[in-house]
Length: 320
Image (cartoon, rainbow, N blue to C red; front, side, top):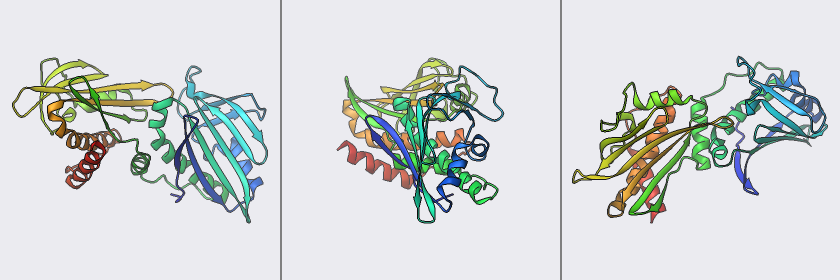
């Protein structure tokens, strides 16, 4: 994979991904590859149909998928078309802009995605950055007349960006009687039923019963299930050292047709157990990393004790 590095910034409250590539080809040649539909087919993640008229509709289609006119990811609009320097178009809630400028005997390509979808859109920036890296690698191969290389380890690439962008971090916020620990993690496009099945591992959680093992953090003992609404909600009590209920853990899955699937995980902690928060945040952080990996078919073990210690120290400093 190219060594270029995507950056995530914010402007006017909108998250922006930016990637720069130095290409050893003249601007005019690159312009054809980034604007002509027959050329886009070699590197862009969707089939693109449009007329080079600002304000006209842009249609996107995905190989192997039946066209759905109600799918927001199939619709867009051409916003700018300035040959051979700049093209910009809306894609669902996002705006994609490609700028070209001469650079020695080649050119500099600047790719930018203004990320729509608010908080959930920003949450997906890690997989978007890894995906665009792969696409731009394919673009470079096309320009060089090479067959596109096989994508690298996408899970590793996504996780690297998720960490660098800080969108894997949990938070602790004060609530009545104590605190709520909260994580929100992107799960890409996994269907809700599949995410639920992965969590419960064939079990059928019922109120009053035991929670499935994959839903449990070992910081404290799990109590009884208090809510089970497949495929969206699983909640259970957790108990303190004295065996009495101390708070609740809640898994809640959601899906946005324009952004994808996500999970919200919360744990309530009473004020007198506030000292457990850093350790609990660290373990849930790793737990959710492992859960995301499992959605990609990767099961991780043993438990990474060194990373747990590192994250516990990280969260302790943030909570201080």
